[in-house]
Image (cartoon, rainbow over all chains, first blue to last red; front, top):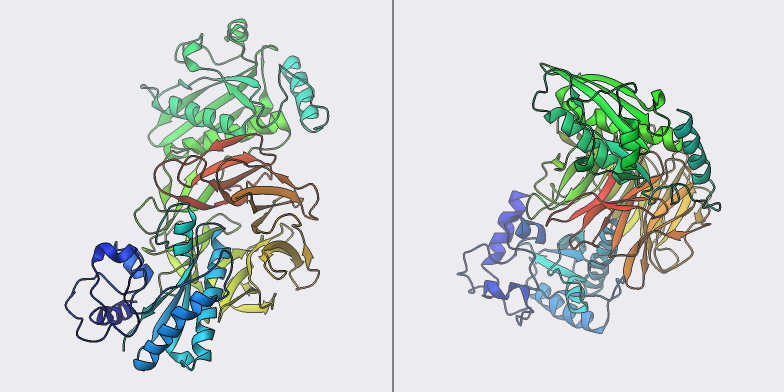
Length: 174
Length: 436
């Protein structure tokens, strides 16, 4: 786990400079813009798996180099806006052909824990299948489900639920 | 003896015939009636408990158990007419008329003797109108000081057995997942003799779905300690957690068979979760489901031959049962579009699960064939029911008091009591078998 953490820290240097306070808001950074040269954060503010970040007290990250893909309630289908985000993610993955990515499936708070773990796995699989269909090699893409265990926000409201129903992409190195 | 025994026999009889709903002492006797007035007196010091702390603690634990059962109205100790430390503890010495005047139908008195670490408790249930003790619900225990709380729990279980024909569930433990240690999740153990649950895992990560081994000495849970979720078993005596089921894929949950020899495991490979049978050493025996839809949350029937689980194979998550050889798939839940986290009663006759209803989540209890379904909760969001070893009560998490806390209910939802408190989230409770 520690080795993986170091890889993620390497990725930090490549991430757009985004104020830490903005980590819980939608980011404007589009895939492809986070090129080398954006180094300098140096802090453990960005990147890393949602669990590693939570261990460090940072909480899960929203967006990042690759955009988050959102879902309807109890669904793992990719809608139009999900495909738009994924098209940009695919571009970035093509341009950064050595980058590997871990897809994290997340769910909102409504529903029971184990079912949401299974649902998160389905969501990550949907994204992996899409990337695969666009020619991104399967061995560059791993998946994990966090179910509803690591939410971005805690409010019981549709805007918060919608943010939490997502696949977050963690770039593991380039 | 006669008066209380006859009264209780009437109550037991009525309690077993729901349609009768007859009135005894002004209320229906059963969980939630809180109708049976009982006085629990601190144990009298018979040596070694000069400050009365052991005797008071015993009475506090016993009183809480009786209150949680929902059958009793505990009389306020401030109104007690006898000094616990100077009055007698035998029928010949007790002022039954005085206790009857207070409204007590039953009375618990006894003695405690402590010498070094050894504690001896003698406790008796008295029939106040009958002016007799009740030997069937009286106990004598010898153990260490740390056993005092369990002695009280066993006393409560015995009183419930005498009154209801069914032993109480309080000499047991509940494990659950909590954030009370910080931002991550660990397994905690709650017992009915303390207010503060004890942390038993040290994963420093996420843990999910703890479940008991049949001997109550080990707990199975899913942990993210190796990044990808795997199934671990935790020895409660040594606090050592060892991996039982690893890759390939993610392990979402697991459950020990009633005889401890096998495991039901949900494994997700490539985005498809299915249920597998493993031996207790972590070797796969066979795959039980093979469907592209979500299959998850397997739990054993008490006979060890069937399982209940959740599957979304019809497009929405529903509860199913099947035989452990993979045959006999039968859908149990028929109402609603979201039914998850089944729990099979240790008596075998009922299955509880979580249902989504009007935006919230509630606990349903119904027959194994899906008959007689009854929603037993209505306040807040309620999830992950687990049965008490007596099959009469359940524990589940509920947000009715803000955060997720553990609540206890009888299986008809008439008596609902909060078990854990605080600002952390307590979820995924699992109630142990009876302790040895």
